Amino acid sequence: MVLDSDHHTAVFLEYAERFLGDSTKENNHIQLKIDHSLKVLENAKAIVADTPISKHTAESTLLAALYHDIGRFCQYRKYKTFNDRKSVNHGHLGVKVLKKSRVHHLIPDSHRRDILSAIALHNRNTIPSHIAEPLRTICDIVRDSDKIDIFRVMLNHFSSESNDSTVALEAIPHPTQYTQQIFENVWQGRPCLYSDIHWTNDFKLILVSWTYQLNFPISYRLFYDSGLFDQLFALLPQSKEFWDLKEKLIRFITRRKGAVPTGTVARCN
Ligand SMILES: [Fe+2]
Image 1 (tube, rainbow, N blue to C red):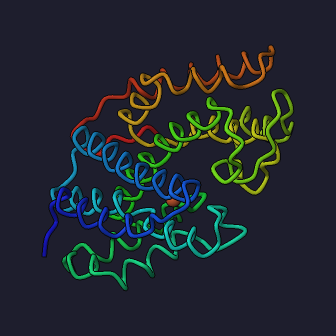
Image 2 (image 1 turned 90 degrees about the vertical axis):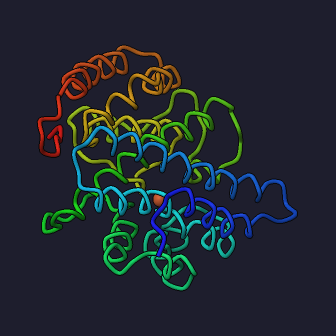
């Protein structure tokens, strides 16, 4: 049984690179998910290093981060989309894929259940309140790590003005159009749903809404100090209501990222 994340990275790459083929467009989509998985692992390592958790929980967290999107490759091969509403829940598919792969046998029984549960839960809108430790912490770290990197991926996509609609889940590009209800939800700190996305600005607003959902002070530092937040607002409509929203969120982030870990797992909420 091997828990070393470098060994598992090699195993993950061996699995994922089998989905690369002759089509440049399809290879770009597969490579996007390979790179994303590795970045999520990197983010999780940074959060784990800053958070007082047991070695056992840290090991489960890093493997859950690496394998959280293992279902994406089969999803794309079969349905040619990353849109779960038009195909399957990629978290649930990931659990099925991992159970059938040799990875399953490389993870000890003592860690397997939490890793599979974290994969199944990583793309839920919220984590059910009955989820207990250590799974709750594993989920919180994987979900923060995932959000921070989705931010990077989507910024690259929107900045490149690519017309590849697969990455933005088929949202319609427009420089100024957005859905007022989504803006209101973000302003009020209410949850937003992918299913409400119509315009690409709606997608950007949903990314902005994650400001309220990160769990650890280090997550806010990774997210804000990297410049991702400012870059995203530069791609949204330049109007007073968006400037006001940005100011409101910066005040929130400043309070959150300054929270100091105190011996137990320091969450921001
Ligand atoms: Fe995912």
